[in-house]
Length: 279
Ligand code: ADP
Ligand code: MG
Image (cartoon, rainbow, N blue to C red; front, side, top):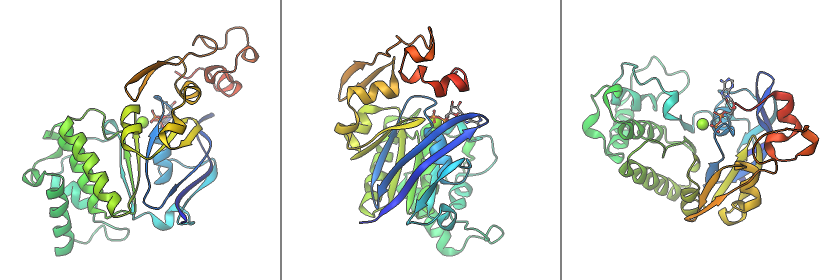
């Protein structure tokens, strides 16, 4: 089976600093992948690169072997909640309706079919009764459902969910997982970023572990080894399969004291030394 989505040596820079450094992995058609890594690992940047919101410095992204521009419409992207201006004065119906606009159709009204798809998407996400409410008035979980309904209305081939489980209630979290289950049955390829390693290992067949560079990609048991977790999360505690693991850095987390050559952990590598401290 051909891979639906391929990243080949993808690098994205903000100024002089690499947010993604030569990242290569691929996702099979209909695969659902958890994208995991610490804060600042480049998870959001990865999704933005896939929808053309962050330009590539080098490398390429291919969907069905073609550049994403040719397939922009079937990619649905649900950004991290903090990146949305929730004061924007639109109703829930309007936001979900946006999922029906294709290139070149901005000025057209929604057709009867479009409106039916919007209503079906609202129903599926359990928010039909909120259709006329302004999005700014909703709870975090309800807002998340609105964006999931918009993504559904796009009838995507690829779904990108950036931190959909952060800051939402348990019911919305379950509704999101249920939605992913339904899309899997329709062979929709999905990438879902999360901080929750337990969720990633328990609910996803494939995981991509990232910290600017690709640390590992594959089945959760292959990816979540202590060595990989140390490379990604050095100096932090992580929980996988209910087991807490404290992953030490070789320098104890204090950074490149005594010269970068003295230490080879992720904090101390020369690339960081050139770009300055992480935060
Ligand atoms: P994650 O989603 O994994 O937390 P991001 O992709 O948001 O990581 O960020 C990766 C790195 O790029 C971070 O160091 C972040 O500070 C930096 N970054 C993200 N967006 C911008 C931006 N618009 N301008 C400059 N730096 C950015
Ligand atoms: Mg992010």
